[in-house]
Length: 102
Image 1: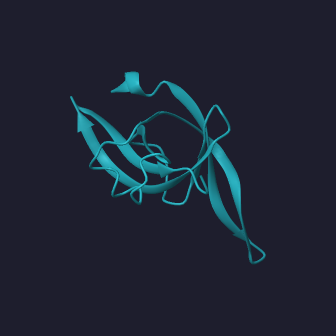
Image 2: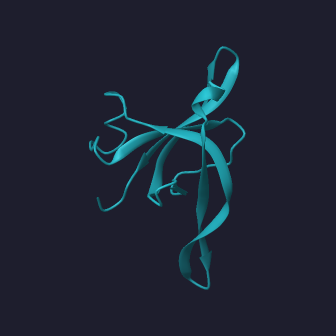
């Protein structure tokens, strides 16, 4: 499964300061962004064009509403996090992500 974690992404989290919400960078993560399967389209609010699946290690602190910034500066919003899944003894998280306002 580790072979699928071939990119580094910036991770931002929604924070609340002085009654104002904004995204703050909390670090970088290794993972992979891939096309949605037909089963995932429902979780991505039915739009396979703007949705994708992000795979990351099980120990990555990623939450719904986080932003994942890819190598093309696209800002993906995390819609759901499924954890843990395991393939051949390797644990990983599977996140449904969307590009907002596309």
